[in-house]
Picture (cartoon, rainbow, N blue to C red):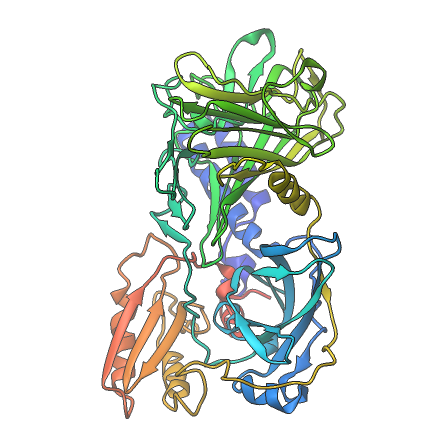
Length: 583
């Protein structure tokens, strides 16, 4: 069969499952392992193509032509063709400062070239001036002529205020924006060091768990867990885990030798590290049950003294355990000498937890009476699906033997029977600000603000006296300031990935080019390679350099490689999809 369509050029998951079964029947476990790995790659590809089930805040048809905006705004947004209007409302009667909004937005394919380069966000000021805001795009997906993405901004509003934001897009000459930010990230994969002005977080290089937290205050408090753990590297965050029935062995995500699966989002407003898989036992792979799937995400934000952990434990078959823990923190040493806890009504208390409140805890923490340094966990969401035995327990202790401070939330215990389809879901916020005298009200207000998120919806242009000040475009983002750039992009379409022999697999349609900058005849191209099995980017970089060097007006060409974000099928445009045989 000649390979003329996508289905001819690969093998389906169903075919690979049959081949795997055949290899098992033949006793060829080596070959079966190869099929299992190939199936995994197919699943990764299918997952790239899968859009989230969340509805976009702004649907694909909710847009305004920039030319239809008030004249001062048209001038300000010169170079961009379209915009979307969203309304952001504070409805809980409390002021908000830099609250993160992570929204899904949809765009027509023909209106946009590259969302990460083109999307810009402006807020309408009280005086009618558009002011650009720091924004971040991630998770872009191309499906059936529609591109969607997650868009992150931070909103500050007064109590009961409504503000309008304009999302601009449709500028093929746009460059990747470089917004100033205190959010820094070092490392690769899931083993990262993440910091902002308030703290530095270190994630384990082995399995991505939060290992250390260093405060940015003058005292530089460092929270860590010492000792050998239970054979795994110690972390301050020890969840999630469960003890099997009859107390035989414990299954933990901290026993992963590496993350089974993970994804990382990096940007000026948000660094997100998500990891998922089945936990491992102390003698893995002697026992490898696939019964409870665990999914954990850390989210760190620019300029904010708190971070979020989302967790989910899904039961995929009926089974019994002894107990499970879904939030456990250990701090070695004695940095803290007072305890804090929050009741079911959102009221914060100092001191120990009384017996009558031990099973209804919605916040736990510690602080130091002298330095006022503190660490608080606030449980924004903690619920179960198809399971009735959830405990909101886990009283803190100041004197955990051999360490210091500890809390451990035993969310299910006393030998619970889990049924397939049950799930335990949590969202926790961890606050690192000092706990001043009389600081109860501040913590309660913060907790309340997270329990009542800001409302975001598609909106109409506000009725305001539009004014213009400055411009959205930077140097090189319009034809006036970069007359060479269109010619550079066109020339790049003549550079092929010649490992695809018989089709037009040029580096633009294939999505290898992330950014192009042209300054006084000097061209800088930021590119990627399709996967890390081809790290020698000069194989394509040198042909790019040679082709661009032939353009009139080009004096120098610099090629840079990036692996962030990782290339995937959504980088292909329509022409690239046709070349690959993907409908």
